[in-house]
Amino acid sequence: MAKKFDYEVADNRVVFQQKGLNNFEQSGFSTYARVIVETTIGNAGDYEKLTTSFTATPAELNALSAEFKKKIQQGFQGTNLKLISWYGIAITKVNGRTALKISYLRQLADRPFVVVNTYRFQNNDRMHSIITSYRQEDEATWKPLLNKTVNSFTITDVR
Image (cartoon, rainbow, N blue to C red):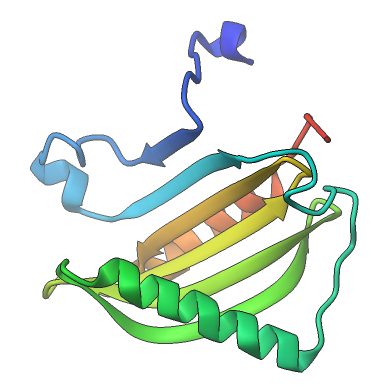
C-alpha cells in the first residue's frame, strides 16, 4: 500500500485529520475528526497474544474503568482539557480481534465537546491502539464513518 499511494510510515504513531488543522487554517476548523493509530512496543509476553479472546467479570471491568479514568484525568492536569463524561470501558470485537474499548467525552477550554473512543489490541510484545475523536455536535456525520474506519483495521503482524 505504501508504494501504491506513495507514503511511508516511519514512526509508531500516525495521525489522520482534516486538512488545514495543523496550519490553523480557518477551513480546518469547520469540523473536527481525528484518527490516531499507534503502537507501543514492549517485550515478548508483556501482552496477551492477539489471538486471545479475553474476558473480564463486571468487577474487573469496573476496576479497570476506574484505573483508566484516573489516568485520563491525570493526563489532563495542567492543560485546558476537561473530562465531561466517562462512558467507561468494554471488551469488544473488531474484525474478529478482541479489543478493550475506552470511551469518554472531553472538552478543550470552552470549545465544543469531543467524543473519544480508544481501541486497544494486545499483540504479545506490543499494544496497538486506534483512537478516534470527533465533535459531539458532528456525531451524525463522523460516528458512522469512524466506526467503519475502526472496523476496517487489520493487524497483519500477528505475534
